[in-house]
Length: 122
Image (cartoon, rainbow, N blue to C red; front, top):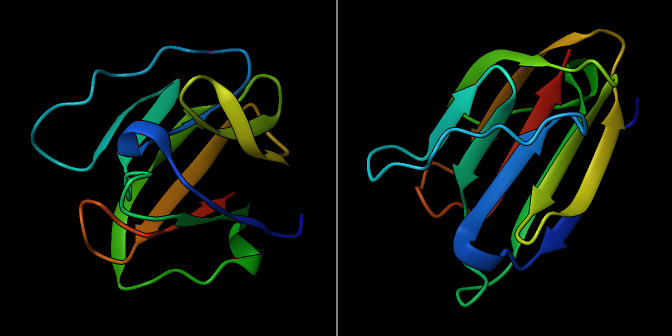
């Protein structure tokens, strides 16, 4: 799977990473920039009023991360797809995956309100 990228102004400065079968996200907390459970990942990024966020998603073999790894974990993917969405539930990127559990790694530029989000799937 080739990586897909988009530059998008993100309402509320929060991205959602999930399988389309689920919408069970952890509540964002004041501490940290990434909140996750086995069914979804929420992460902070640049707020739309500050400018666009560059988001890339693709196979781990085709993705080069940064020195700022913010998340490394497993996501349930029974539909064998991973969506990246923004409020109000609009999908901005989608990738097919091979398995019903997918390792997800997320890198940023190092800032809590990051302008760069790189998502590797395997």
